[in-house]
Image (cartoon, rainbow, N blue to C red; front, side, top):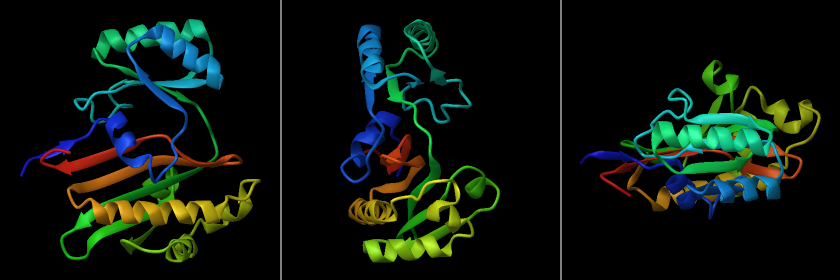
Length: 210
């Protein structure tokens, strides 16, 4: 059966019942984009959204650090011209970068992967895995598996709300177990901030559609 990669907005809609996302709006209307950005406050991120764009950053479909109405209008029209797609406008945030993913393993079934994001995933492969679904208590045990676990304990200057994070990971594990048609799910990055835990981007590979 053919695989299908859902666009970023559709993936977000599928997941936002179990994972909080940063404030976002998808639109082809530049006035709505400006109104949204002024409502949540600059800087914002712009992303062209299409299921034809697999790697948005590599394709030049993402603009970070948009800090004024003038910049927003310029990049909004430039992305629309290049990709002929609606534009996702998101509040730009920062914090402790995390990775959450899942896959349907042929041997074990649904498996959840969690780790610190950025270099910890890309270079150190610092990831913990559990068979889904599982409880928040089991999710907390994943933190202890990580070499970089001290970052979750406040090494970056503020302590991550690990209770909230464990609940989100547990809910995600249930989502993965309830949707065997989703072969792969990646939520990356997630940022743990002083205000909570928020996902920024998501990718879902579906078996033959959504």
